[in-house]
Length: 177
Image (cartoon, rainbow, N blue to C red; front, side, top):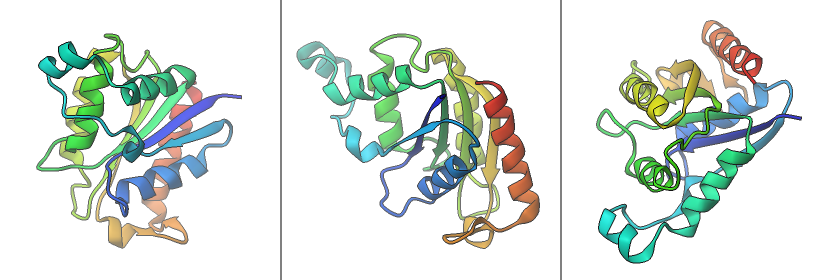
């Protein structure tokens, strides 16, 4: 059975990206899902001085171990000021110091959502261009615009056209495993 690592690039308790990524995981037809919460990987703000003084924190090694176990990754990144959240960027910075190939050449379904009409497309574009430099094999991207209008806690994505698009992206992801 394929191991699928799933997480949102947010530490918000009510993260809409967590809701989206959890819903997306429910669409995976086969595989074992491991859902991570970035709150479980709390680390000091990355700096080369901290790394030299104290080494790489254990939570970074734990996150890397989860990547190594997985055959594929589904992530949904929250957008803060057009880029990654500080929490995701910090995990990214620490884990990338363990080994240059952070994402282990694993297939990635890269997603984002936001309350507005762009659906986090700026962070999606940033990640799509950066992840390959650290071994990320982005096989599909998905952006959910206007989260409150297109998502229900009980049903997930309620717009049939958008749901069909997501299912297509999940299928592309599964085919790449």
